[in-house]
Amino acid sequence: MSERWTEERLAVLPVIDGVRQRGVEMTRLETFCDAAFAFAVTLLVIGDGIPRSYNELILALKGVPAFAASFAAIASFWWSHRTWSRRYGLEDSITTVISLGMVFIMLVYVYPLKMVFSAFAYWASGGWCPAEFTLADAGEMLGIFVIYGLGFAAQTGMLALLHLRVLKAGDALGLNEVERIRTRQGAVQNLVLGATGVLSALWAVTMPPAVSMFAGFCYMTLPLTMPWVSIRFGKLVDKAERTGTN
Image (cartoon, rainbow, N blue to C red; front, top):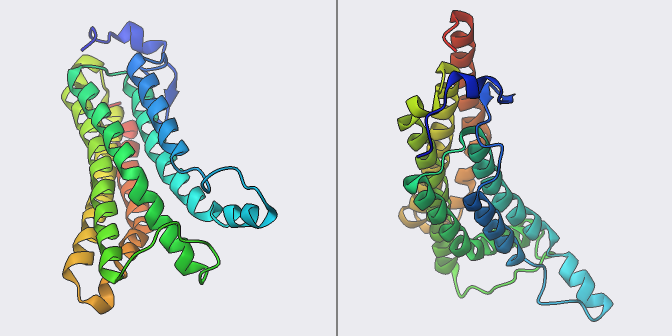
């Protein structure tokens, strides 16, 4: 771990959402992670190459919805890691291993990610959007849901571990009360996300065939759970600011 943060060093840092930005300067680890996430995006490339005819162009463009959803998922993980890096600037052996683990999981996870969104786009569009892979039966689709859910849980679990590591190093980082609350919020948010992925995987393997195909709809709970977590921790931040414990 780098040297302890002093109040003099912390006083000159920019503040975003109540958290002083300790990681303004990019590190080699962050640069590597950025490059790895960018590489993962290239694996989502639309089609098998440059279209050679109008029909091939239209077919490739029909893959845009699945590509956009997959891109958004990868970008959200990248943004979460970037936000964590900017907030805390923590780079020790533990956070390095966790970050590299996150990169590894992403490079494995990118293929089931694309498959799930491709299948969803195919189903939602009534077959207008192409499915870029074939499944022999419904059981294989359930297997994709399980792989995706566990990969999603692993990624968000890594982000939760990064925030928990920050809490353990809170004194050395000079975290104030508001920053500790925001850090706990990041950990809880990612734990809820991970639990949703596990729930989806369990739904796919335990529910009767008639309802197991709806495992993907477990993620529809996130528009409810994520705002609830934000509101809950927002109240804690307001309380800390009113009592002057920040």
